[in-house]
Length: 185
Ligand SMILES: Cc1cc2nc3c(=O)[nH]c(=O)nc-3n(C[C@H](O)[C@H](O)[C@H](O)COP(=O)(O)O)c2cc1C
Image (cartoon, rainbow, N blue to C red; front, side, top):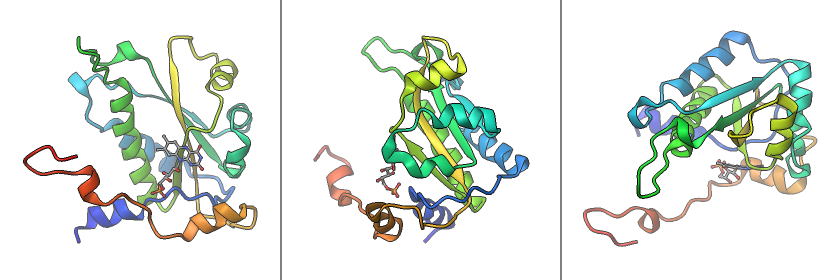
């Protein structure tokens, strides 16, 4: 197995985060990794708001849903935002802003794993609270928050989340999502 595939497989949506601070240089490398993603016409439509000081973290934490209680411990919470006109918009409805943010954010997640961190994207937050707390202009969509932290204790995790932490990976069979040479899905 190639090394990169091993790294990709290693990434999991872990929740047992430590509150230990992430060194600034490590955080900077993770963010740089995001910026090397490809994007339509090199539009680079991703916008990242990195919350790492107490004030910013409190504002970001306020937006988390109850189900994401575990992310309250994260020493870094990153908001991923974009607006549709920052990227290619094709006449048949193909808007690439969200796609390109996904590519960049996966880079960020993989670099985080390489740095010995967990990095977990979330939809469970109120985007309007994030926008209000940080004065993000109306036209932006806050797509996801990413909780980042070193591996920590799992003592505070619910039974369900504790099980997920070490459960086998769950993936659709490849023939359900990939076909070769002719459409068969
Ligand atoms: C866009 C997106 C939103 C997600 N939202 C949440 C969330 O709010 N809370 C959570 O615990 N996990 C969330 N996840 C993590 C997924 O549940 C997880 O990636 C999926 O179950 C596959 O597990 P794996 O990442 O460990 O392979 C989200 C993942 C993505 C990509």
